[in-house]
Structures are given as structure tokens and as C-alpha cells.
Image 1 (cartoon, rainbow, N blue to C red):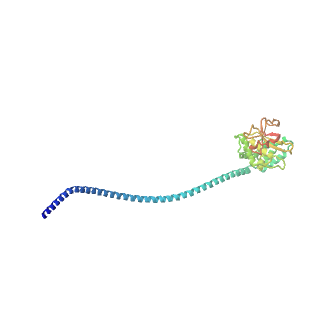
Image 2: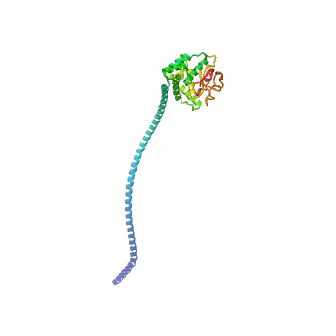
Image 3: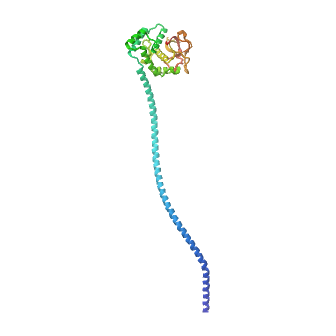
Length: 344
């Protein structure tokens, strides 16, 4: 029985050994496959580990760059904010300076205008004046020839003063006396003053007649003011320019000489007020031999040949008013009594 048991044991061992051999071969094959797969995985892992290290290094480098860029960005934002504030401050300062400049420019223009006005007044004051010789000449002239018995004689003497201012006529005996004392002719001295005045008016023959009249009237109304005479005397143009004042006769004589000097045929005219019920009033104005005054209104006579002036239209010019007011009712409220043309 004991030997039988040994046999069974041996058989079992043999069976087990055979089974082990049968199982070992597949297991060995599986093990080899797994080992090979493991080696491949290990190799892949090593490569991945190497790639990871490279990427990690690259990441760290990028992180460092990012940190630097972020720091630069923060610094730039701070600098931008500072510059923005500085810019706004500068812009405000610029706007303030621009505003100040505009005010200063306006002040400068105003001062320049004031300067031009003062310069004009200065030129008028310094250039438009007569000396004692010519002043005494006119005083003697009025005593000898400046009396009249009629309106016609009065306007003729006024017209003669205009012609003398232009150098067209003179009184021989008195002129000889003046020349002996002064060494020059009275009308030449008067003409120099007239030329100064013409230059200041800005009027010239090259302009339209209405423009010439407008400039002359503007000059007269700017620089000459009205004053009554203590005695009713007629001032020569040079005297009125020197005094910067005169009455209606003096305004008229001055305007007529300036008109004639720029080629506008003129006449001296004497008027009475149309209102016969009022206290008698007389007035002197200029007549100009023109067809119209352009766009400006005016009063006129279509024919005055009966008064010794040339045929055609004669327009009334009130020298105490500018060109804009020549058509006013005030100018038309007078009746013509006498007129005298300016001799050529």
C-alpha cells in the first residue's frame, strides 16, 4: 500500500512537471513580449523625460522673459500715465498760451490801428500847417479883396481862394510883395500843403470819381471840426488844414480845392433855408459836375447855366457829411442863391 502511494505521487509529480512545461512556454513568450514592451515604454519614457526637461527649461526661459516683459509693461504703463498727465498739462498750457496769444494779437491789432490813427493825426498836425508868411498873406488878402456886396461876389471870392490853393490865380501886387519877403510864391507854398493833404486822403485821379469824393469827405470829416467865426471871414484851404477847424464856408472851400486837385469839376454854392417862416439861415456847399454818385443818394440840379456854370448836371455835396449821407433830407432843405465855378 505504501509503494502504491509512492507511485501515485510520482505520477502526480510527472503530470505536474509536464503541465509546467506546457504552461511555461506560453508564459515565457508572454514574458518576453511584456519585457520588450516594457523596454520600449522605458525608452519612450526616457525620451519624454528628456522632452519634458527641454520644455520645462524653455518654459522657465519664457517665464523669465514674460516676467521681464510684464515688468517693462508695468513700467511703461506707469511712464505712459506720467506722460499722459504731462501731455494734458502741456496741452492746457498750450491752450492757455494760445488764448493769451489770441488776446495779445487782438491787442496788437488794436494798438496797430491806434498807432495808424495817431500816425495819421501826427502827419496831419505836422505837415498840414502854414508859416507866418503865408498866414499874414491871407490876412492882408482878406483886408484888400475879401469884402463883398452880394452873394455872387462872396462865392466868387471863395472860388478864387480855391483857385489860388491850386496855383491857378493870384493877386499880382500882393504876390510881388510876398515874393520879395519870402523868396517864393504864395500859391506854391499853398500847393505844397495841398499836396500833403491829398496824399493823406488817399484820393487820386486813377480812382472812380465817387471813390475820390468818398475818400476826401472821409478825410475832412475825420480831421476837420466845425467852429463858428467871430467875424464872417473865408479861410483859404491851407488855413483850414492848419487850424483843423472852420465853418461851412471853410469846409466848402477846402472840399472844392481837394475835388479839383483830383480832376473833379467843382463850384462853390451859397444857399438859403427853404423854410421861410423860420429865422433866415444861410449855408455854403460844393457842387460837382458829375452824372451820379454811384450807389449813393444825392441831390442835384439838372441845369445851372443861368448862374454861370457849365451846362449839365451838378450834384450838391455837403462837405460836413460823408458820402453815405449826401442823399439825406438835410442836404435837400436849401435853396440855391449863387454859384461860382472854379477857374481852370
